[in-house]
Length: 182
Image 1: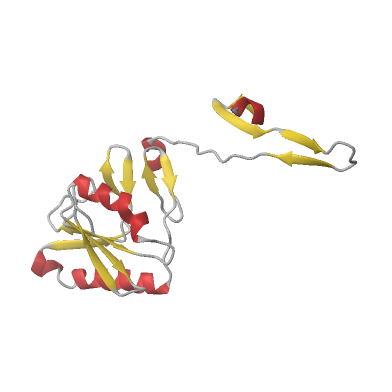
Image 2: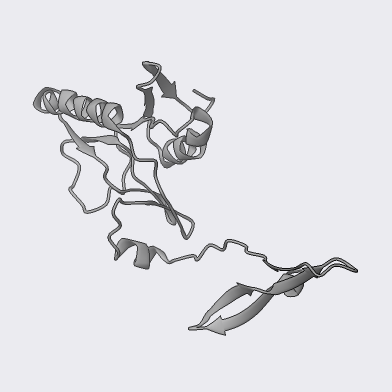
C-alpha cells in the first residue's frame, strides 16, 4: 500500500518519501481536486551524532530518536530552582551535588534529562552522568501527565536509581515512584 501513496527515492544515502498527488473528480462534475497525502517520518540518529550536537533546548534521546521535552513555565522553573537550592544548601552536610537539566545515560541508547539530579558529592564528574544518581526529580509541566512520565520513570528505575520523585506544581502533589508504580 505504501508504494501506492508514496514515491520512495534514495537521496544522500537516506530513503526519502514524497507524497504522490491524486486527482479527485466526481463523474459528471467539473470539480477537480488535487489531494496530497503526507505521512510523518522519523529520522533516526546515532548516539555519536546526539552527543556531538547541541540542542536548544536539549532533548532526550531514546533508541535513535530525539524527543522534545515539555518546557516548563514560571511555576515549573520556580519549583525546579527551589529544589536544587534546597539540596545545594545541604550539600556539605549530606555529601551531595544537585544539578539541573543534566544528561543522564540510562541505557546504551537512551539519554534522559531530568529536571533535578542529586549525585553523591564524591562521584567522578563527567560531561554525562553514567552512574545512577541518588535521586532524580521531575517537575511536571502543564502539558505533562503522570501517564506520559511512565516510560521516563521506568528508564530511571531500570537504570538503578533508587529514588524517583515527580512533583506537580499545579496540584501541589508529590509522587514517589518505584517499580510497582507511583
